[in-house]
Length: 102
Length: 149
Image (cartoon, rainbow over the protein chains, first blue to last red):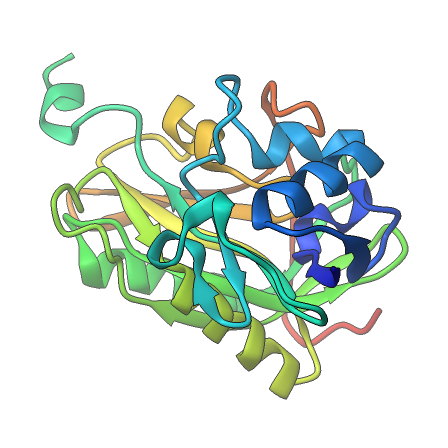
């Protein structure tokens, strides 16, 4: 299946500066595997050490979050668009009341 | 990683600090919209967002993928790019935490404002290294008027 993967701005430097990448895949898992096979540097930003997608990496197939489909087993159809969308998280090191105690 | 400075108008820095005061003792967050040119990066506008982290908003913030897409859309409509994020550290230093690093993306600029006892203090900016090992400080260059790249 020929599909398109949209690369978010912060990761384009690791994907040949491309906004999107066309590749052949039957499932989302295959597509991400093909993508990181082609662009090895993307791997550490998409996957944790245990090989699972990082929690703040969200993957959509034509605007549907794969968490509500069949996750990485989600089947793809010809012409599907896969989008990698960041979620952003962070925060201070410790609880403020603890820090004030030091 | 970058070595380049982040240009931003004083008025926008004031708005980030005011947002941190407004949400104190909880963390504020928002998007930095701007331009990224050859070695030059400039914040041209802000998109304040709600902190979606309801369970621990005093020391955590979260921007959902829907809000990220809203920020990207807003940037496109203004002919700008989504170039980073800001958030506050209530009663904590404006340095990225290990939690910040684990959840960070490369390339983006991350502005952090420290708010102590409801008063804004130091404001810093950071960028994640390519290998995700650490953040590097990014110099903030404030300007009185809009600059152009």
